[in-house]
Image (cartoon, one colour):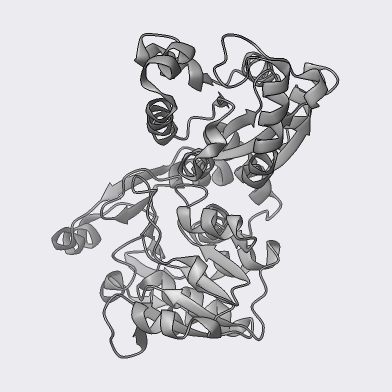
Length: 413
């Protein structure tokens, strides 16, 4: 079987790994096509099937011989089967989105939703929301029939309980962008972003920080791929493999990010996990010192804390999805931007050690004495709690803390 993904531009895509996992064979490639190349592609391709992404989910319909009822209703196609010289179009975005909402407890019935974007995936989302009993408005950068503008969206902000981003705003590498400001919505209950890369977009990060339920597009991508493989192979697929696929990919791509006080054990635990699992180890303070050409203490004395913090933010921004273990400096949580960058492709663990077990050091500019570190703990405690996905108590052995971190991501030490 020969399969693939068409779109433009494609950049990084999880699709080859996902389909290879489900189909147990290496049969999926990426085909970056410009619009003028589509006709020739359909005329000459030897693919047995392919997925379609931005910006061709509607454009490809003119080349198809048949459409499934759902694809016809939605008016967009993301899965094409090429059999006996004919092309059949389907929409599995609809199925993936529907299942993602159900699995993550995102309530839609009786809610009014704002769907950001008017492309092919937005139409699949609208169809799923209607089935779940929700109403919605499409939102477009330019007001047009059937869609309101972003200015109107903010004017009517109190009408919306659910927000769905179906635009590419916030996609890697522009991870510092969000399509809307969630703080301007007074009755928002849930935020869904169909972007899969990064794992947690700035939109989702902002929702998280305001206590709003959220989920990202990685799970939708995996679920729609399983549905697409059903059409490619003409057989039912094992739905229990969805979680196994996500776990396998996340192990490869998601960082384990350790935050906490100086002397809380972050570096030791990170090194232990890296050695036992084969993950790369990233010591942020070590990287910063290498760039400074001096120690952090000397940097504070000569250039001040602001200079150090700016460099720390640069390093946070550069850390990508590597499946690494990242040990952060104690003050990384002082800058919200740092935590947005680190959480984009990372799960954040707060290594929390009882202040009585922490100790000061003359090499640490902000915690040289026992009283310094106790004061610092009280100042930072709420920030560690705010920016962490999981708190890990580290008052016993380092092995226990490391085991707890791996257990949280479905692994063992």
